[in-house]
Length: 186
Image (tube, rainbow, N blue to C red; front, side):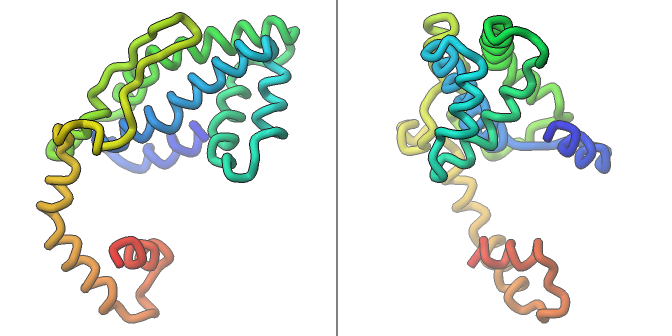
């Protein structure tokens, strides 16, 4: 996954993102690290945790499995289960505390304007390897401190124009991406 992302990014001279993408990284990937640390603590076994992620998670948690399994495979194989368990715990702990910084270092800039409140919330370790404070995931819990709603309202006329343009395109000019965009704006 990392190599595919790196290949995709190599096509561009600037790597720009937004605080919303940072919040999604924290919400999807870093929260799963907390889950994996919890499973490692509960099972005390890398192999059992890997088996749980691949075989026990229900179909409704397929996204969780698609995030957890590659994270578990980042731990070097060829060691005892005890050693793998400790390596995984340390690696996931490191990523939790440094993942946001690594995410930002991979970018040239963060776009101004859309300031996701929860993206700015720091990750704080409450109990080593066990409890982490990561902020909430819902804008409604920010007491109107999140700028995403205001920004979406501001660009709504542009989105409507874009939707009208996409609807007016002849079918032979619609790529899969344009069809998806039309459905998104519809």
